[in-house]
Length: 373
Image (cartoon, rainbow, N blue to C red; front, side):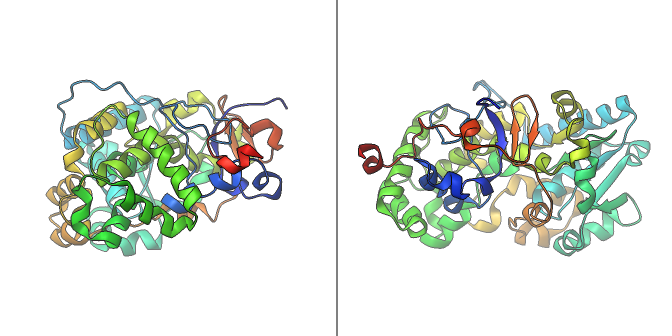
C-alpha cells in the first residue's frame, strides 16, 4: 500500500517497537499523558506537524457574528436529529452515561420529541450509567424509553439506524486539564493570564524532561497564535488545545470499534446521515469561540454550568446541578472493544499497516539534539 493520510488512528500504535524508534515518535507519545491517555491530536489549524500523516476533515468554522444561546442550539440540534429519524423511518440510539453531556443530549431530544418520536428512541446505557445519575434514570428513562446495553453499540454502526453520542462537548467547553490546573494551583488560577513558567511546572511534572516540556510549550505557543479569538487565560489556553487538536479524534474514535463485517458499510454517506456527535456542529463551535466566559465560574463544580442549568430546568435536581462534575465514562466501554487501528480519508478501515504508509518524517516532535545527529 502506498503512503496515505488518516483521519483517525489509535494511540496504541505509537509505542510499538517498529514506531517508537522513528524520529519524533517517542516525543509525540507524551501528548496523551499531558492531556488525556488515548487521545491523538490532529491539528485543525495546520500549525503542528505530527509523525502520523493525517488529513483534516472537520475544519474550524470561520469566526462570524453569532447570537444563539447554548439552549437554542441544543433544541435545534434535537429537532434536526428527530426529523432525520422520521425521514429515514428509523430508530435513534442515544449513548447515555449519566454524565452531563449525554444527559443534556437526552433531555434535548425529549423536550422536542412528540409522543410518537419518543417511541423511536433507545437509550444505550450500563449499570454504571444508572449509578452515575440514578434519579434521572428513575424519573425519565425507566418504564418510559426503550433501553439497551451500551456494549452492543459497535454492532449498530453500518446498520439501518441513527446513533447519537455526547462527544465533543468537552472540546466546546474546555478540557479535563481545567480541573487538573485548579487542583494543582488553586481554583482561582483558571481565569488568570497564563504564564509560561507555571505551564512549564504543570506539564513537566508529567513529562519529567525539560527538553520535551519546552518543545511542547513552543508548539503550543504557535498554536495560540493560530486562534481566531484572543487566548489570554489558563482556561482559554487548555480549551484551545482541546478545541483545535482533539475535535476530530473525539468524533471518529468510537467508529474504530465497528465489527469487520460492517466496516464496508461505514462510508462517508453513512457518517453524514446516520452517525452523529450531538455537539459536533458549526453552531456549537461558534458558540464556543464567542463565549469564553461561559465555561466555568470559580469552582470545578461549576464547569459546564450552562449545560447543568438546562438540565436543572428539566429535572429540578439541584444536587446534580450543584455537585455533578466531569467524569470520563466512554473510555471504560471503548477499552473493552476490538478496534481498527486506522481510518483513512476515504473511510477505509485497517487493522494493521506498515510504518511507511503512515509515518511522516518531516514532523515537529524531533528534539534538537536528534536533528543534529
